[in-house]
Image (cartoon, rainbow, N blue to C red):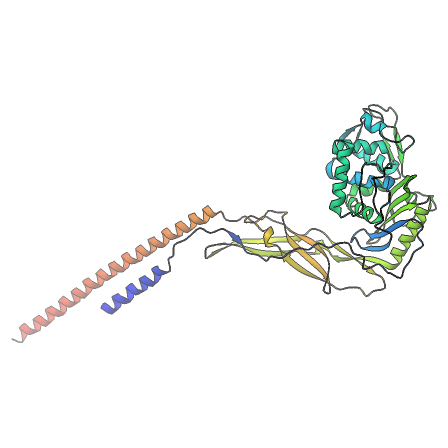
Length: 459
């Protein structure tokens, strides 16, 4: 009996030893940590043995999807941009303005341009929408419209120029400095073919920009100052039939000219998945179109853009857990999608690459609560050992972490329940022990009585 009683209390001790004090600890969501790297535009696809007959002082051909440079001539030389400056003006208008905003033209905007420079005869106090301004800038190269937009977005011409230079720096421009929004000559207003290609590539991400540069004719209805409708016409000859310079797949672009800059031209052309940007600086007259055609012909004949990764075809999930001391809580599955396609530029003469993917979840992007739309990592795309691009990984649903107070309350309730169960077990054991003692005593008494009875019987 004593041995059985001892075993019972040993079991109770072992059970109670598993109960430990719970201390609060910072919540952690377990996931993998990786560092994202930035893919810079590269020149490794340029064929050093190829020399094109480019008349202009400087030129570049760039893949609009990948930033790969396919051909260049003096691409970092500082030159005057003239009106292709307006691509930066339009880019900032898209970034900071709304198309339906009203732009009111000041006296400085109307009379702050050179006489006989490009304009659409706006008047002091006249009001048109920002969208109408952008059509005037991109189709008719309206200099006063550019100044009006600069004042509307940046507060002043000088303030807007600061924004232009800051954006150029952000894009990686190396030889650019702007002092005005329209490109009218200033010795301190310059750029390079490479820098203009970066700007041209960035503004192309706006669908409205694509729509405007492809427009052949646009109407601005009567305004508060102008009773007649204004008609705007595209100036870029590569999209204007019956021009001899019309080019298959050309989407439009921006022309420029000053006496110091000579002719400048930015042009976009797309065939299938391949979209190219050509920039020509310090050229002469129609040679800008001849040089641009030479660049595009070379690009489309020798290179193509391949889709290395499709965001529509990608989806994955990750189990998200939250730890509290030694306990782990299942928060559910995080649905993950990719935000962009990844393209690469290849030479048509090369063997088609086979692409692989590597998923990287950045632990620094994970917080106790993961909100839908949060960037939580990348899927990196490789051609062999070479990383060719990446797409951001985006949370498709929200994962809510369990609040620490809730965990504490839950653990407190669990502890109470555990203690109550232990007490119940102890009470039950004590009762059983008492019952056993009583039974033993009863049995013992019966044996004693029988023994005593036998003794009396045999006397």
